[in-house]
Length: 219
Image 1 (cartoon, rainbow, N blue to C red):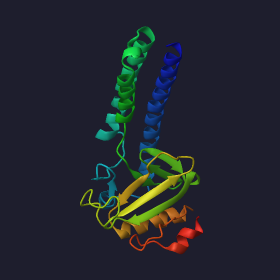
Image 2: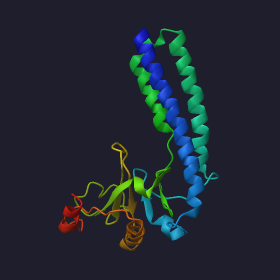
Image 3: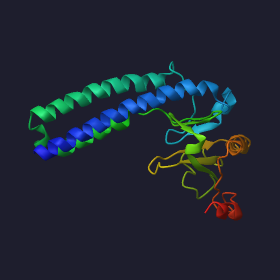
Image 4: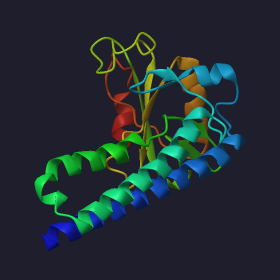
């Protein structure tokens, strides 16, 4: 019982740290996004489609509804997590509700999440509410979403668009991809990334418009 309590206390403290760090990253991203090289206007925002929700990307400022949701959601989550931690430390509730306790903990953590986004900045990018310098980016990859692609058919806006995946160094678990609506916008984004020294890794597939030689170059 003592070991289990210590373990869950450590998990709770890690969760609290994650929430605070997530809010700090989002605050920094909102401040930096004002200097974005891309996107800059309404049509460019409309051409970036956020995965899973398949909605057009929105500006990132401290006045947007999604930003305020994260701020107040973080406050509420910290209060709730603190209350749960007190319950664990002062009662035997953990013994009888182990799985419910674990599910509730991860549900709270995962619910405080800002909508995806991509801003290309002079010295780095904002990707899904977090700032990365160009030296932190390993490479990027593009695929056209045609028939038989995993994303094809999930939403009409996605079909025949382009999947842009950005890989960050030492980040093995984050799914960093967005969908670009047309080839002109993809080329504009690729040009900016290439100018900043970010390498392109293209899948060698005729359907995806890949180039085998270019793929081999980075493998």
